[in-house]
Image (cartoon, rainbow, N blue to C red; front, side, top):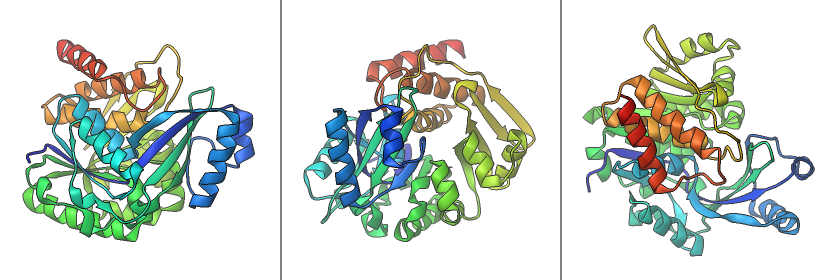
Length: 333
């Protein structure tokens, strides 16, 4: 198996619901963030949701998986290291990734319950997540097949792993191998809640530095304590050689050394669902890098993918849409 991108992250079956703001307020969840929950709390929320609306369906999600999917859909070869249970949802998860041409390992499956994430979408398109990690909370080096990493150009680390000590230890093994074979290391800060409540875990994942760091504007400000975006970018460059900050409708900012490259926005006609947009941005950006695109063109491709994504429901585009956007990027270059 030869892959270009090796990802490691949580395996969560995403179940998406369109709701109103008043329902979200009644849940006590903080809009736009992710909250971890025990299974009984999630069952209670599912019951309330089913009395309120219906699910728009389920996909093999989790932040890292969404990024890996985008990379694969654009034509890249990718592997995802994760952990699922030996239940129906676990079988669904692995088959769904395999159908998307994402490589997985049989050792990802273990005895337990597959993690799930309820994704609540309000009319403004903002996503709020209620996550039961299930067996993925025990992700460890025992479920991480490092053999495919040998051929990878990039190791991509999901920031949500910051909450798990065993997962951080698995990442440490993957980082060591990546450094030894000169594979570039990328990480996403993933969520403002991770920066607020699991900052030490993120610092552990970043360790002595990475090659590429992805985050959004709020995460950058929270992680660095800098309110001015360019100062936050400068502070993040002490942890990463290349920093990419997404800014929603304002595009993105790319920084390295003393260079700052603004990426113009490509605004969707209507924002329906922001779920997975940042993840898809990271996957598309990494794909551009793997194909030798300039940083500006990587930013163009990534913003084109994410801005198209927020104009529809769900965390993934149709595969032909990825191809169309890639052709547009290549024609522009």
